[in-house]
Length: 99
Image 1 (cartoon, helix red, strand yellow):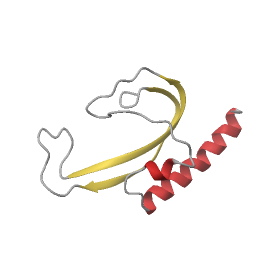
Image 2: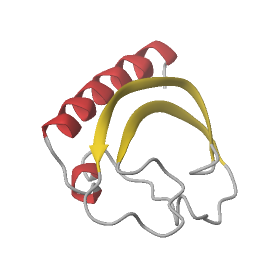
Image 3: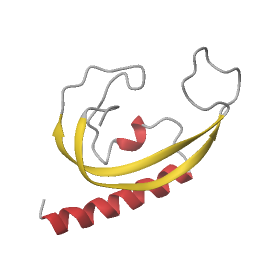
């Protein structure tokens, strides 16, 4: 909620990936360096909250399933697997929740 300004329900962790950064550590880096982890979640957006950006997220965008891949930096097989799993899970939730 803090990073993107939304209220969520039905939150589920989809997976994680080890990230090995290359190059010099950025000044004042608040994250583990040079190894960190990216974690992917899915959830139902209940409410869009006021959002003005921060040092963690400069903005937010609402993107359709069809347009998601073109907006994602460095798409790969891991992202594809997580995306397909998330789409299937979302379809099941929509049916169950009658959305």
